[in-house]
Amino acid sequence: MTSAERDPVRRVGRWVSVRLQHRDVRIQGDTGDECVSYAGIVITSFENGVEVGERWIPLGGDPSEADDEQLIQQLRDALIWQARCPPKAAGE
Image (tube, rainbow, N blue to C red; front, side):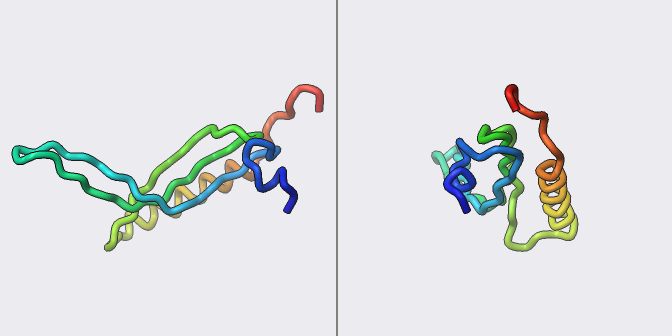
């Protein structure tokens, strides 16, 4: 792998990053604030090193079939987007 492929700022073309991430949500209650942490999968889309989109899909401990289908569809959409040829930059 070249350094341009490892560096999202210099990488040419379309690509997606898929990673596990926890997000914290602060909830205000009658007795004070409570913080809840949620696990999820982040799908980030890049085009020529620029982030062009991000989706976060919650990842529960006991996912339903609908949860699994949503995740599969989001991954599928990201990979199809990556496979499409982006417009060429000026000077190419």
